[in-house]
Image 1 (cartoon, rainbow, N blue to C red):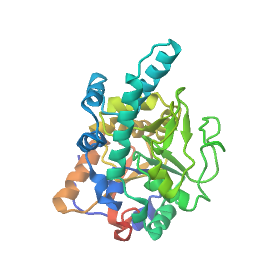
Image 2: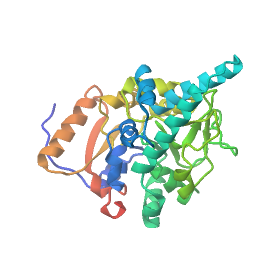
Image 3: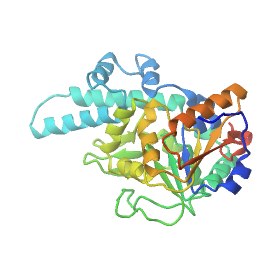
Image 4: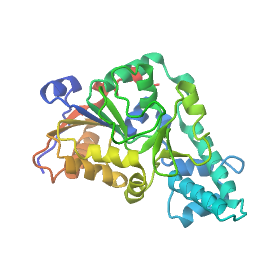
Length: 329
């Protein structure tokens, strides 16, 4: 491993020398924008919500029995059980009761940690919108609504990956403009019983307030905090998520990583980048001191040490449009 120092280039200088057509955004970007996004686990937040609004003991027991802290697979399993019971004329209300109980806890947890629409400055939306449209493809592992709201602010110039009824069709994904792909789903997406994906038609405050308030049979499609193998299992059960991960694995040109740590819980994302072998990586680092910068450089260098043909370049996150102090709320 070469000697590392604490030097970080300004984003504009690096972008001039090594253009990036692809942007990959992680939770660090959301935290830089809205600090409460720094929570550790949505499942733990749902547990903390208390007896009336949080996960009941029986709800938690179901998660434990399925060896998962992901909401989507658990809600999907309950949905399947309800439909199977109905088909077999089995009279049991327990699965449906658990379904609504878990969904209520999920709704409350999300509304507790998510940035309210009323706190979103229009100028910040415009800044985010302009930053995104500078790329051919934007990937995000976040399931919050920041990028959704940013695109809705001025959708012209962004590719529409869902049809007029809001459904995803893998046969029509070559739209004109910047494509924004949600690797872990998002609060704006729903999974249908057959594994297909629908995008909600709401916007602004309704997109947040109406989260998970959907018709029976449709489950919020997002992959919250869990081990990488559990995340990958959930991704493979969705047409949209599996397609999005496949697109990431084919990105051969320059890629900018912003707010991505790529730790063990996101091994599947790291493996996709390794499969893609992009020509170079521009990696954002927040300068929290010389030792911190060097440690972060060492972390990423070790992550990509088996990619000798991919050059790594590091830049100051605070000089990128996504990290400007003016966008912090």
